[in-house]
Image 1 (cartoon, rainbow, N blue to C red):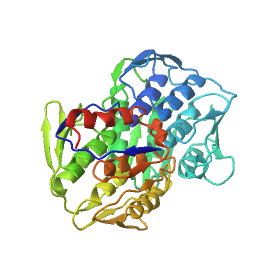
Image 2 (image 1 turned 90 degrees about the vertical axis):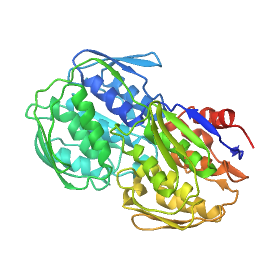
Image 3 (image 1 turned 30 degrees about the vertical axis):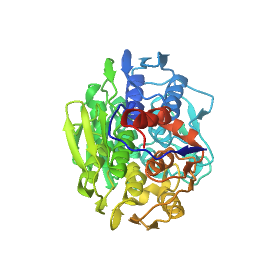
Image 4 (image 1 turned 90 degrees about the horizontal axis):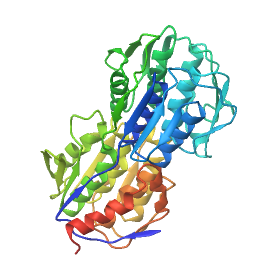
Length: 424
């Protein structure tokens, strides 16, 4: 357990690690490439290292130099792996790899933690079945563990339901160029989290893959394409930037997060704009984006395209005047925890009126009090509620080590808010 000490921030400059989402996708693309790629500034977290270890099991050559990872690609064809591939509770690893594993040989078994076994993947398995790939949930419940046979990925037409996760579509997009016939993908529902689809297409384009699309409803990817090996740099993670912007919003201080810009495909960069609507000042400076806090007012916002930022916004909303309404995020129930219920429960501990609804959250600002925060083994819960402790005495975070999932150095970087901004 860790106690967050209140302090005043004057002007802090923070650098966050590489994007988790970009790291996953870049590592997979490099493993499918036609030669040796160097991935620079990757996020080294529990989740991304699980993906890296899985790719090594699938035959990719891996030379992990920490600040950069050198990967020998397999030219679109993975090797057999008789061992189970363990992915803990990394939903991104499970969903993306369940698709590209079909490009290999033999049968692959992807496993994880008990929580993973409650995270739906059925819509992706149904799409793979449409393509003639006999992927299945081993418990016949639409959730991991899953078995994916290689050698059956020819391609073709497929409909995909992305109402639960856009990662199902991303999995198909990543594997499509390496199939014989390519894929014509129609999205029947969703997708939620649309910027993550843009991110996947961006990675494909960077690696030399051509994708034709009609918005978010139709994607055509020719088969027989080649991922081109090269030198790729991962941009900073906008999701992680949000906690530091939120710290500025709550305390009235000013925080610049370096290397982040609105030109990014990461949807979470838009959280700065939400804070601006709430009363913060947002500046787009050469080195990054600066948020300066001010008197906060409630907003109504559709968070479908940045669901990971819902706990962050909810905690900031606890300090705003009025009731903030967060809409269109029903899919948060299938994350590392049921984030809607979890966020609501912990805000109530702090004396805040919060209501979890079927597809969103309502938070009425007030005077939060200290509490021991349960993190539900969810990294985003820990980092979001750390913001409250900057303003409210007595905020204690249980299981602070859960941040290893996405931001291993979070607590050390968090301390820099005090070191650079001054304590009060």
